[in-house]
Amino acid sequence: MTGNREDAEEIVQDAFVRAYRALGKMSPEQRADLRLQPWLYTITLNVTRNRLRSKRPANVALDALADPDALLRESNEGPPQPERIVEQNAEIALVERALLQLPMHLRAAATLRFIEGRSHPEIAEILNQPIGTVKSHVHRAVRILRRILGPQIGRFNPEGVPVHALS
Amino acid sequence: MRCRDVDALWDELRGECQASLKETVHTHLRACPSCQAVYEQYAGVAYCLSCLPRPEPSCDLAKKVIQHIAALKGVAAPIVLSVIATPLGRLYAGFKDQRIAYLSLDTGDSPEEVAGRAGRRLRRPVVLGEAPAWLLRTIERFFSTWKVDDAAVDISDLTPFEQAVLRAAARIPPGEVRSYAWVATQIGRPRAARAVGRVMARNPLPLLFPCHRVVDSSGDLHDYFYGLEMKAKLLQMEGYRG
Image (cartoon, rainbow over all chains, first blue to last red; front, side, top):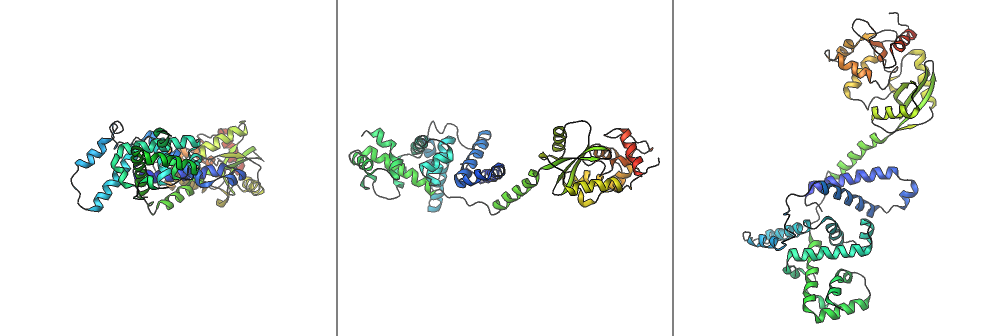
């Protein structure tokens, strides 16, 4: 979500401190009703939002959304990288940078859905949004990422078989 | 089914969804190469995201969080403020963990106002409560001996300098006085007499840490939060013949 470890760890620390404070203020009944994992996700995301609002990532080009292909061109123009490991790292960096270009709410939806592997109802609980909104955010995130990463992303289809052959 | 509808259903299809819906979409996909390509690209996006390395937290992150919270725990503990009748009239005494942390003679302010002052001074929440037996005994003993057991007071919220000043002042025997400069010398900061005066003026535990026994170098009583008359009265009660 933040694009770097230091920020992420500070956010985690902050989130735990907030959670600790909030637990102290809760009544025993409230604590018994609490679903801990989604609640921690929610707090962490709130802290992330607050922090990123005040501290915009400077390393992401502001016009990248307007011209998503720029990222790909940039990477294609780079020096040839013969070793496979380097190539892999470059691909990871490409995906990470694409994700960082999404607006906060879409990035949160995509991260929870595809990186954390959460279901729509779970995401709806974490983000405190209707399921329909979650679905639409996830979908918009994927559409934008597809545009940024380009049609070649299709070759990463995990099953290695055409989608239409799945029944 | 139109391409637009099919497009929106992609993520839905990955999870549990009605078999009939799945069938409808797949029928469309078989007939529509462009939707097929889009679906493959979406799947590629999802796959790439799921492959992103999940950074392991640094090994000391858990420790850092725990330390952070432990520090917070101390700050969060509230002071309980209670009212006690004494030979000097009503006395507000704030305590935590069976130790007195705040003391204030009644100056006509409401308990809430005193609680506000105590909270600001010690940077802790303050709640009003009954005085427990140990507190009554400690205060009673103080008014007969003019001394307090070190284990009965808590000045841990103060700065190291403030703590040193108060401990030095506590070494002045009842009925005697010392100068601000004397206290400053005692703590190894002979030039800090004025700073000592400032600590005395903000003493959260008057009486128990006897700032009333600290006077200026000429022997003049100088000043007291509760007035010079109270300072003189206290010293007189202790047996001071100055």
